[in-house]
Amino acid sequence: MTDNTAAQYDVIIAGGGPGGVVMGYLLARAGRKVLLMEAYKDFNRQFRGDTLNPLAMGLLDQMGLMDEILKLPHNKVETVKAVGAGGIEAYGLTYSRMPSKFNYVMILAQPVFLDFMVAKASQYPNFHVRMQARVNSLIEENGVITGVTYKDVKGETHRLSAKLVVGADGRNSYVREAAALETITTTQTTDYVVWFKLPLETDDVADGLVAREVSDSTLFMFRRADEWQVSLTLKKGVDYKAWKARGIEVMRADVAQMVPEFAGRMQDIEWKDTALLPVELKREVKWYRDGLLLIGDAAHIMSPFGGIGINLAIRDAVIAANRLARPLEQGRPSTKILASIQKRVEWEIKLTQGIQAKLQDSAPAPDKVIGLPPIARFFLRIPVLRDLPIFLLSFGLVPVKVDTSVLRQRPTSLMPAALEG
Ligand SMILES: Cc1cc2nc3c(=O)[nH]c(=O)nc-3n(C[C@H](O)[C@H](O)[C@H](O)COP(=O)(O)OP(=O)(O)OC[C@H]3O[C@@H](n4cnc5c(N)ncnc54)[C@H](O)[C@@H]3O)c2cc1C
Image (cartoon, rainbow, N blue to C red):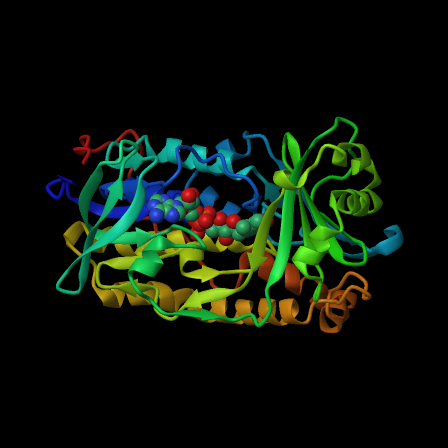
């Protein structure tokens, strides 16, 4: 084992998802010595969601990045439409009335966003990134997490130390597990979502995020700049194994019935082209230990419905960077500071998960039409209230700004390059 403990980082972030890359960027910009560790060789992931909502775009704008992000290939969605059986529009949720210059959902392929953020962070020589570096143990001294180990591509194990280890390693977080933190599952039932991609054709008319349904599944289609990402959520009580056993032809026909334009393209889809996602909502009782913090999905797994997971991970990253940039300059941040990061948003996470769990556990059975619960339908009919659900999805309830102290460094005022561990 190579001992790199001399190469002390201010922070080691395990996981290059939206939360990890944004936190890494901000702390590097604030002058901290950051190591971002990503298990895979690149960010080229599929089926992870591609949405940036007004909250995330507003935060990225405060970082001065939105002008460039808008030049990346993307789509804008102003209305999320749900189309019921027979092609009848069940409801539309409109972002265009939101009080923001970013009053839409941006569909930006996650790999493009992650590459962009890492390139921006890499302008600071105190930012380091290691790909194919999967954290495989936490180093603990007298109850304090003081670093991590990982195996490189050659199979050699390295030991690295830091004032703070951040677990931004997603829904199956290894860091969370290794820290032995307590997890609560808030859903009683598991939903199953089947994902696949289809080629985009030049005459495709649908503009972005559309939901459609047949009797036992609901389809969501997300238009990326160069392909469609399609998800099928199986309705309550539909058993995945039995559903799959009906054969790929039945699945192809279901999709063709929901989106006739896809009929031809579905002929090339086999089961091996699909990915299965079990959806359960979870959160940690404590997001921290001495020397360790969890953010994003590692701390709270939201439902993919509503498209807020990426945005909440980015928000966690901003709150954490705001509160940690200065303390990390002095030494190891206290657990009081780490606790304050959780406290800032936890009540809203609980509330949101409560609503999502209710919707998931009471989602329509196969014989029911595409569904919003009656209370949501009621809201949508009343002008003053109709925008409330979209407002909550757009901004959440916790107002967050990027601290000016975090933004003080520009790539032109760079620190001397830090030693790579
Ligand atoms: C199928 C699907 C569809 C979704 N759709 C949407 C959507 O439309 N909109 C939305 O907002 N959210 C959506 N979500 C949720 C969203 O993807 C997550 O909430 C968001 O990506 C969480 O970001 P994160 O940074 O916390 O973690 P992640 O994005 O999960 O990133 C974690 C990273 O850590 C890396 N990693 C894992 N283990 C280790 C380790 N031991 N060492 C080093 N690195 C490690 C992983 O490779 C990964 O790159 C969807 C999720 C899924 C699964």
